[in-house]
Length: 178
Figure 1 (cartoon, rainbow, N blue to C red):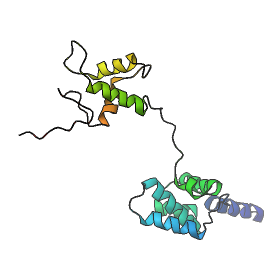
Figure 2 (cartoon, rainbow, N blue to C red):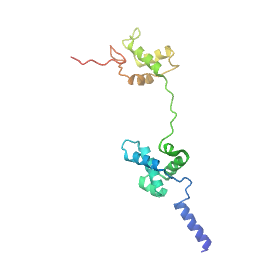
Figure 3 (cartoon, rainbow, N blue to C red):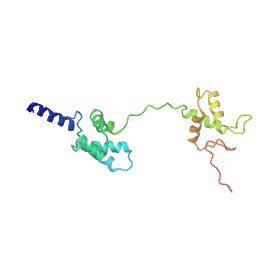
Figure 4 (cartoon, helix red, strand yellow):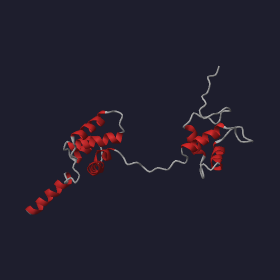
């Protein structure tokens, strides 16, 4: 076998096991202390805990393979945490970006108006407010262009209201029965 070919194979094997790291984790003392605090707490989200552990092990000089084995995470996970730390610092590496989600259908004032409607007497021909009636009333009052009964239910769930009770009120506490 040619010596040059043998040397090339050895180099290939080395690059497969320990590639040159583009993102090197080098923590300051303050960052190390913060990560130690996070990993010693029991009230941190699992993702944040795992990312803190990855950073601590990467700072200690462990390879990606050793980190993967110790923490049972994938190579891309370790690489992403390294990259996010180098590019954005510790807060960026530990926390997710805010997710867009959907805008709220009603703001605080509109929710208060909806609750006030629940407290008012039911419309003529109805014994009590239903979620569909309330959704229609919100559109009628032009609080929203359209709204589902489910959204109305979620707004009412945030309060202590019970729209099914005869004497309902947004903040009415049920009196103990005698």
